[in-house]
Length: 82
Image (cartoon, rainbow, N blue to C red; front, side):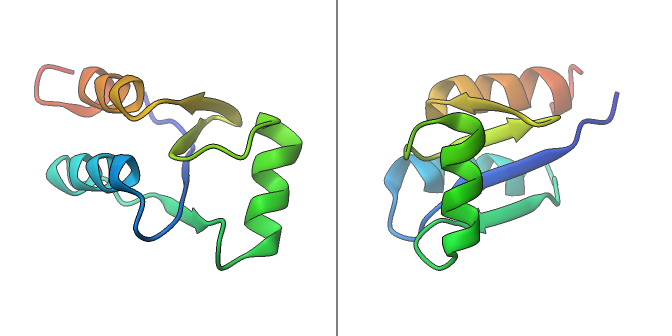
């Protein structure tokens, strides 16, 4: 099943880097929104997610926080076993 995925992040964020590495490993090309470079991205994150916490993966418009949870979800939905 295809999901609409958007990753909210910023450069220099270690947990964000782990999620980005997983996205590259799984060959997933998704939308990325840098909350330090885009006020619009920050406002989207705060409006929907209510927290200024990254990484945050929006899955079909619903936020998921914590890099380990995001990576687990990505692997279970897009990994080889999926």
